Image 1: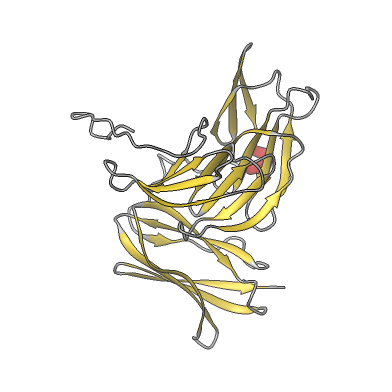
Image 2: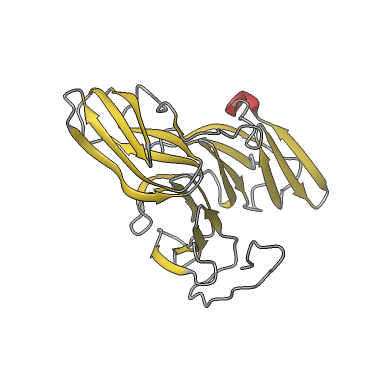
Length: 277
Protein backbone atom coordinates (compact mmCIF):
# COMPACT_ATOMS: atom_id res chain seq x y z
CA UNK A 1 0.00 0.00 0.00
CA UNK A 2 1.27 3.48 -0.88
CA UNK A 3 0.33 6.71 0.91
CA UNK A 4 -1.76 9.26 -0.98
CA UNK A 5 0.67 12.15 -0.47
CA UNK A 6 2.28 12.52 -3.93
CA UNK A 7 4.99 14.79 -2.53
CA UNK A 8 6.06 12.22 0.03
CA UNK A 9 5.27 8.71 -1.19
CA UNK A 10 5.89 5.85 1.20
CA UNK A 11 5.06 2.17 1.14
CA UNK A 12 3.28 0.25 3.89
CA UNK A 13 3.64 -3.52 4.05
CA UNK A 14 1.88 -5.88 6.40
CA UNK A 15 1.62 -9.64 6.68
CA UNK A 16 -1.68 -11.07 5.50
CA UNK A 17 -2.50 -14.60 6.55
CA UNK A 18 -4.69 -15.95 3.77
CA UNK A 19 -4.74 -16.93 0.09
CA UNK A 20 -5.01 -13.70 -1.86
CA UNK A 21 -4.58 -13.31 -5.61
CA UNK A 22 -7.55 -11.08 -6.55
CA UNK A 23 -7.88 -7.32 -5.97
CA UNK A 24 -9.57 -5.95 -2.83
CA UNK A 25 -12.34 -3.36 -2.66
CA UNK A 26 -11.94 -0.11 -0.70
CA UNK A 27 -14.88 1.93 0.62
CA UNK A 28 -14.37 4.86 2.97
CA UNK A 29 -11.56 3.71 5.27
CA UNK A 30 -12.17 -0.02 4.98
CA UNK A 31 -10.55 -2.59 2.72
CA UNK A 32 -12.30 -5.86 1.82
CA UNK A 33 -9.97 -8.68 0.79
CA UNK A 34 -11.07 -11.89 -0.99
CA UNK A 35 -8.91 -14.59 0.60
CA UNK A 36 -10.24 -17.69 -1.17
CA UNK A 37 -10.53 -20.57 1.36
CA UNK A 38 -9.97 -18.09 4.20
CA UNK A 39 -13.12 -16.19 3.23
CA UNK A 40 -13.26 -12.39 3.34
CA UNK A 41 -11.01 -10.25 5.55
CA UNK A 42 -11.99 -6.68 6.47
CA UNK A 43 -9.32 -4.13 7.42
CA UNK A 44 -9.62 -0.66 8.92
CA UNK A 45 -7.13 1.45 6.94
CA UNK A 46 -7.95 4.85 8.47
CA UNK A 47 -4.32 4.80 9.65
CA UNK A 48 -2.66 3.71 6.43
CA UNK A 49 0.64 3.08 8.23
CA UNK A 50 -1.01 0.60 10.57
CA UNK A 51 -3.88 -1.36 8.97
CA UNK A 52 -6.03 -3.18 11.53
CA UNK A 53 -8.00 -6.37 10.91
CA UNK A 54 -11.63 -5.79 11.89
CA UNK A 55 -13.15 -9.16 11.07
CA UNK A 56 -13.09 -12.13 8.75
CA UNK A 57 -15.87 -14.44 7.67
CA UNK A 58 -16.34 -17.41 5.36
CA UNK A 59 -18.67 -18.04 2.45
CA UNK A 60 -19.80 -21.48 1.29
CA UNK A 61 -16.99 -21.87 -1.26
CA UNK A 62 -13.75 -20.00 -1.92
CA UNK A 63 -14.09 -16.20 -2.00
CA UNK A 64 -12.61 -15.21 -5.37
CA UNK A 65 -14.00 -11.82 -6.36
CA UNK A 66 -15.80 -9.06 -4.49
CA UNK A 67 -16.88 -5.45 -4.66
CA UNK A 68 -18.45 -3.03 -2.20
CA UNK A 69 -20.47 0.18 -2.37
CA UNK A 70 -22.06 2.00 0.53
CA UNK A 71 -23.16 -0.62 3.04
CA UNK A 72 -23.37 -3.48 0.53
CA UNK A 73 -20.70 -6.09 -0.19
CA UNK A 74 -21.02 -8.68 -2.97
CA UNK A 75 -18.79 -11.75 -2.82
CA UNK A 76 -18.39 -14.30 -5.59
CA UNK A 77 -17.76 -17.92 -4.61
CA UNK A 78 -19.45 -19.45 -7.65
CA UNK A 79 -22.68 -17.80 -6.52
CA UNK A 80 -23.24 -14.14 -5.69
CA UNK A 81 -23.40 -13.49 -1.93
CA UNK A 82 -24.87 -10.14 -0.85
CA UNK A 83 -23.93 -8.78 2.60
CA UNK A 84 -24.96 -5.78 4.66
CA UNK A 85 -21.64 -4.41 5.97
CA UNK A 86 -22.95 -1.52 8.04
CA UNK A 87 -21.53 -3.42 11.02
CA UNK A 88 -18.07 -4.31 9.74
CA UNK A 89 -17.37 -6.50 12.75
CA UNK A 90 -20.37 -8.71 11.98
CA UNK A 91 -21.51 -8.53 8.32
CA UNK A 92 -25.05 -9.81 7.70
CA UNK A 93 -25.75 -12.16 4.79
CA UNK A 94 -28.86 -10.84 3.01
CA UNK A 95 -29.12 -13.21 0.05
CA UNK A 96 -27.37 -15.70 -2.21
CA UNK A 97 -28.00 -15.34 -5.95
CA UNK A 98 -27.36 -18.31 -8.24
CA UNK A 99 -25.54 -17.05 -11.34
CA UNK A 100 -25.79 -19.18 -14.51
CA UNK A 101 -22.04 -19.87 -14.69
CA UNK A 102 -18.86 -19.37 -12.68
CA UNK A 103 -18.10 -15.72 -11.93
CA UNK A 104 -14.91 -14.11 -13.16
CA UNK A 105 -15.41 -10.58 -11.84
CA UNK A 106 -18.12 -8.41 -10.27
CA UNK A 107 -18.60 -4.66 -9.91
CA UNK A 108 -21.30 -2.69 -8.08
CA UNK A 109 -22.56 0.61 -9.44
CA UNK A 110 -25.48 2.35 -7.75
CA UNK A 111 -28.19 -0.33 -7.24
CA UNK A 112 -26.83 -2.81 -9.78
CA UNK A 113 -24.12 -5.44 -9.74
CA UNK A 114 -22.46 -6.28 -13.04
CA UNK A 115 -21.31 -9.90 -13.27
CA UNK A 116 -18.67 -11.11 -15.70
CA UNK A 117 -18.91 -14.87 -16.25
CA UNK A 118 -15.81 -16.92 -16.91
CA UNK A 119 -16.25 -20.65 -17.52
CA UNK A 120 -14.27 -21.46 -20.65
CA UNK A 121 -16.31 -24.62 -21.29
CA UNK A 122 -19.43 -22.71 -22.38
CA UNK A 123 -18.59 -20.16 -25.02
CA UNK A 124 -22.22 -19.78 -26.14
CA UNK A 125 -23.50 -18.45 -22.80
CA UNK A 126 -24.03 -14.71 -22.18
CA UNK A 127 -20.89 -13.43 -20.51
CA UNK A 128 -22.26 -10.24 -18.94
CA UNK A 129 -25.13 -10.26 -16.46
CA UNK A 130 -26.74 -7.29 -14.68
CA UNK A 131 -28.47 -7.92 -11.36
CA UNK A 132 -30.77 -5.40 -9.65
CA UNK A 133 -29.93 -4.97 -5.94
CA UNK A 134 -32.67 -2.47 -5.13
CA UNK A 135 -33.94 -5.10 -2.69
CA UNK A 136 -30.67 -6.75 -1.61
CA UNK A 137 -32.58 -9.59 0.03
CA UNK A 138 -34.02 -10.50 -3.37
CA UNK A 139 -31.57 -9.86 -6.24
CA UNK A 140 -33.19 -9.93 -9.67
CA UNK A 141 -31.50 -10.49 -13.04
CA UNK A 142 -32.53 -7.60 -15.31
CA UNK A 143 -30.25 -8.04 -18.29
CA UNK A 144 -27.57 -10.12 -19.95
CA UNK A 145 -25.63 -10.19 -23.16
CA UNK A 146 -23.01 -12.01 -25.15
CA UNK A 147 -19.63 -10.46 -25.80
CA UNK A 148 -17.67 -10.70 -29.03
CA UNK A 149 -15.00 -12.76 -27.32
CA UNK A 150 -14.29 -13.83 -23.76
CA UNK A 151 -13.37 -10.63 -21.86
CA UNK A 152 -10.36 -10.63 -19.59
CA UNK A 153 -11.32 -7.33 -17.92
CA UNK A 154 -14.23 -4.94 -17.81
CA UNK A 155 -14.73 -1.35 -16.69
CA UNK A 156 -17.99 0.43 -15.84
CA UNK A 157 -19.16 3.90 -16.69
CA UNK A 158 -22.95 3.34 -16.81
CA UNK A 159 -24.75 3.12 -19.13
CA UNK A 160 -21.62 1.75 -20.84
CA UNK A 161 -19.57 -1.37 -20.15
CA UNK A 162 -16.04 -1.46 -21.56
CA UNK A 163 -14.34 -4.83 -22.04
CA UNK A 164 -10.93 -5.98 -23.19
CA UNK A 165 -9.89 -9.35 -24.60
CA UNK A 166 -7.13 -10.84 -26.71
CA UNK A 167 -8.72 -9.42 -29.89
CA UNK A 168 -9.30 -5.83 -28.78
CA UNK A 169 -11.81 -3.64 -26.96
CA UNK A 170 -15.60 -3.84 -26.71
CA UNK A 171 -18.15 -1.20 -25.68
CA UNK A 172 -21.65 -2.29 -24.64
CA UNK A 173 -24.56 0.06 -23.95
CA UNK A 174 -27.14 -0.94 -21.31
CA UNK A 175 -29.27 2.16 -20.68
CA UNK A 176 -32.50 0.24 -21.40
CA UNK A 177 -31.76 -1.86 -18.31
CA UNK A 178 -30.13 0.54 -15.83
CA UNK A 179 -31.10 3.96 -17.21
CA UNK A 180 -28.59 6.78 -17.35
CA UNK A 181 -26.66 7.19 -14.11
CA UNK A 182 -25.81 10.65 -12.77
CA UNK A 183 -22.33 11.92 -13.46
CA UNK A 184 -20.38 11.24 -10.28
CA UNK A 185 -17.94 14.07 -10.92
CA UNK A 186 -20.53 16.51 -12.20
CA UNK A 187 -22.98 15.84 -9.38
CA UNK A 188 -21.52 16.70 -6.00
CA UNK A 189 -23.94 18.05 -3.38
CA UNK A 190 -22.58 21.06 -1.54
CA UNK A 191 -24.48 20.29 1.66
CA UNK A 192 -25.15 17.29 3.83
CA UNK A 193 -28.49 15.87 2.75
CA UNK A 194 -30.82 12.88 2.98
CA UNK A 195 -32.43 11.44 -0.15
CA UNK A 196 -35.88 9.79 -0.34
CA UNK A 197 -35.95 6.08 0.46
CA UNK A 198 -35.90 3.73 -2.51
CA UNK A 199 -37.97 1.69 -3.12
CA UNK A 200 -40.86 3.34 -1.31
CA UNK A 201 -43.44 1.87 -0.73
CA UNK A 202 -41.40 -1.26 0.00
CA UNK A 203 -41.69 -4.82 1.24
CA UNK A 204 -39.23 -5.73 4.02
CA UNK A 205 -36.12 -3.97 2.63
CA UNK A 206 -35.43 -0.45 1.42
CA UNK A 207 -32.40 1.82 1.28
CA UNK A 208 -31.61 5.37 2.35
CA UNK A 209 -28.88 7.40 0.69
CA UNK A 210 -27.31 10.41 2.36
CA UNK A 211 -24.42 12.68 1.49
CA UNK A 212 -21.90 14.10 3.96
CA UNK A 213 -19.60 17.03 3.26
CA UNK A 214 -17.43 16.37 6.31
CA UNK A 215 -16.86 13.54 8.82
CA UNK A 216 -19.82 13.12 11.15
CA UNK A 217 -21.26 10.78 13.74
CA UNK A 218 -24.43 9.37 12.19
CA UNK A 219 -27.61 8.14 13.85
CA UNK A 220 -30.48 6.64 11.86
CA UNK A 221 -33.67 5.47 13.55
CA UNK A 222 -37.04 4.29 12.27
CA UNK A 223 -40.13 5.65 14.04
CA UNK A 224 -43.80 4.70 13.78
CA UNK A 225 -46.72 7.10 13.39
CA UNK A 226 -46.93 7.46 17.19
CA UNK A 227 -43.36 8.74 17.41
CA UNK A 228 -41.96 5.54 18.95
CA UNK A 229 -38.59 4.29 17.74
CA UNK A 230 -39.01 0.77 16.33
CA UNK A 231 -35.64 0.20 14.64
CA UNK A 232 -32.09 1.37 15.24
CA UNK A 233 -30.34 1.41 11.85
CA UNK A 234 -27.15 3.29 12.74
CA UNK A 235 -26.09 4.32 16.22
CA UNK A 236 -23.30 6.88 16.59
CA UNK A 237 -21.30 5.54 13.65
CA UNK A 238 -18.47 7.69 12.32
CA UNK A 239 -18.89 8.25 8.58
CA UNK A 240 -16.61 10.09 6.19
CA UNK A 241 -17.45 12.64 3.45
CA UNK A 242 -19.25 11.26 0.42
CA UNK A 243 -22.35 9.29 -0.48
CA UNK A 244 -23.52 6.55 1.88
CA UNK A 245 -26.28 3.95 1.71
CA UNK A 246 -28.08 2.52 4.73
CA UNK A 247 -30.07 -0.69 4.32
CA UNK A 248 -33.33 -0.85 6.31
CA UNK A 249 -34.51 -4.34 7.24
CA UNK A 250 -38.18 -4.04 8.26
CA UNK A 251 -38.94 -7.78 8.38
CA UNK A 252 -39.94 -7.48 12.03
CA UNK A 253 -42.41 -4.62 11.47
CA UNK A 254 -46.07 -4.73 10.40
CA UNK A 255 -47.36 -2.84 7.37
CA UNK A 256 -47.87 0.86 7.95
CA UNK A 257 -46.43 4.37 7.75
CA UNK A 258 -43.03 5.06 9.29
CA UNK A 259 -40.37 7.76 9.32
CA UNK A 260 -36.61 7.49 8.99
CA UNK A 261 -34.82 10.05 11.15
CA UNK A 262 -31.21 10.95 10.28
CA UNK A 263 -28.94 12.88 12.61
CA UNK A 264 -25.47 13.72 11.28
CA UNK A 265 -23.63 16.45 13.13
CA UNK A 266 -25.93 19.49 13.15
CA UNK A 267 -28.19 18.02 10.46
CA UNK A 268 -31.60 16.54 11.30
CA UNK A 269 -33.57 15.08 8.38
CA UNK A 270 -36.74 12.98 8.11
CA UNK A 271 -37.85 10.70 5.26
CA UNK A 272 -41.32 9.09 5.11
CA UNK A 273 -41.58 5.33 4.63
CA UNK A 274 -44.51 3.13 3.64
CA UNK A 275 -44.17 -0.57 4.44
CA UNK A 276 -46.49 -2.91 2.53
CA UNK A 277 -46.45 -6.66 3.17
